[in-house]
Amino acid sequence: MNTPALPAAAPVPAVPAMANASESAAIEGWVHQLKAGDDQARKELLNCACERLTRLTRKMLKGFGRLKRWEQTDDVVQNALLRLYRSLAEVQPASALDFYRLAALNIRRELLDLAKRYYGPHGLGANYASVDRGPGQSQAGPAADRPAAGDDPGQLEAWAAFHEQIERLPAEEKEVFDLLWYQELSQAEAAALLQVSERTVKRRWAAARLRLHQSLGGRLPAT
Image (cartoon, rainbow, N blue to C red; front, side, top):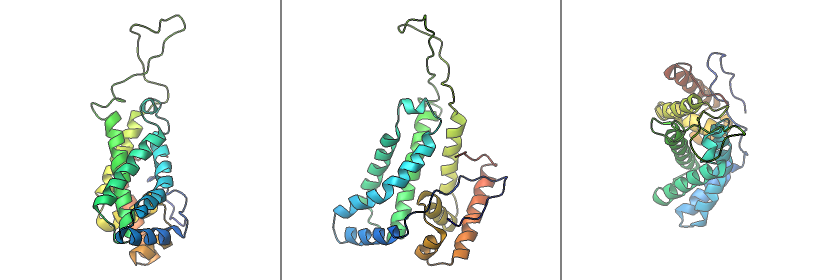
């Protein structure tokens, strides 16, 4: 994807690999089928969102040993797809662009819920330490707990703050960020969907990244 390079001081997580160029056209077709009352179209739209959601979830779970005690990638993906499936039953997108907006919103909400569920003030991950028993210790009875090696609650907290700040971006910047980062579209595809020039997409993308860097004080999640 032809994405402008980020300044060294503002390493916003990279945009994933570009989506298939024909996918937007396919989504547009399924959206029209859904509007015509074809419920199979809802399932096909979920299939379109599944792969990218899986990649985003793997990013979130990477390096969190304790979190994986309760959630696996497939579990999170299933929850997010169920959320999107229900949304499509209540809100019928008018176009592929509206579907992308709805999908990004539901993906973001599921990832935020995941972070808060386990690393919020009362979350399981924030208040649970993995047990490391020595070879001579019984598996029954109390033992000194300590965090699992490699866990970094601060990293998941940074992810949560990142997604929350995306929700607060100005509408035009959030729209571009949703299409490029969550939905993996190329800048050309995003420009076509938004009916603006690629130069406008690049400008909004750069403005969104700068705003995120400033609002998060440079504390951005690593990929």
